[in-house]
Image (cartoon, rainbow, N blue to C red; front, side, top):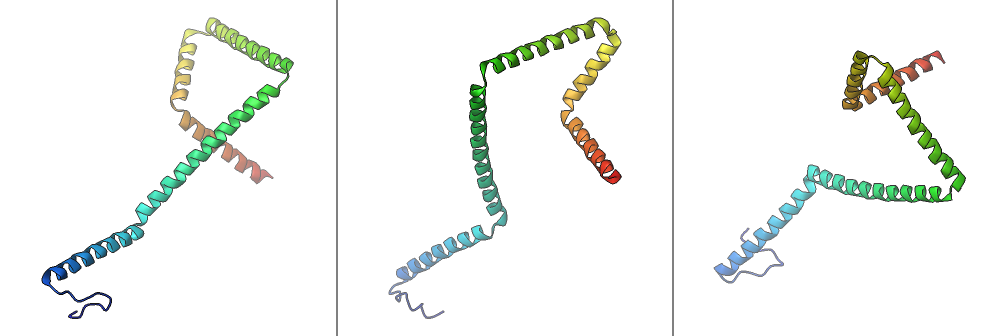
Length: 149
């Protein structure tokens, strides 16, 4: 190490030598940082995941916008009699549901109403668990059905 590299000139003074050493240290530091960044698999994976997440969100937004546009176009193409019939059917369904609720209130004993209300509230609070259980039931049913075939 007593000879300098061939592409660098000789240092003519101690200060010039110090400057060359500092420059070499800075270059080495930058090289080490670059190599460290390349070998940091977790950081690179996080960056890639963030990029993919952003792309997926953008694509989802585009698809949602396109679906909304298509729904509006389909609605605009429906003939007025079909729209009117659908509106009337929806109104009738609401009226029937209201009437059924009133009958339920009038004819069901208080303890049964209280128990059903509590069960409905529990079901609403545990939607995810109920959906998972329903999914398991469907899979089991399909598996049993396949065995029979």
